[in-house]
Image (tube, rainbow, N blue to C red; front, side, top):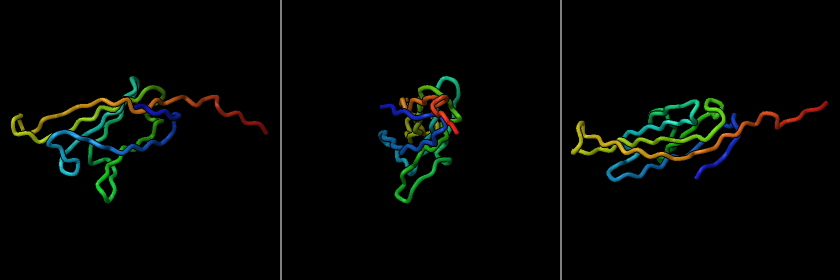
Length: 109
């Protein structure tokens, strides 16, 4: 389910990946964000995590701009039946709709 926010908001999402044979603590994954105009790429090693092993996707929405942000999550699952011993599982998530906040503020002195 998508959320909404204004462009310029710094956003944070917990990363939860469930795939048969995948362990988020052991295995690699990556996340690509795209809104049709701009994109951001994150490797597992770039994402912060807490002492409980929860990973977080943190980004500044200013770098993407207005529009629906879709997250492409790729889990690299160990599987000896595939070349190199890795099977990629991909999922797409409508993450957030970024709204332009221009002309929302009116200042007077």
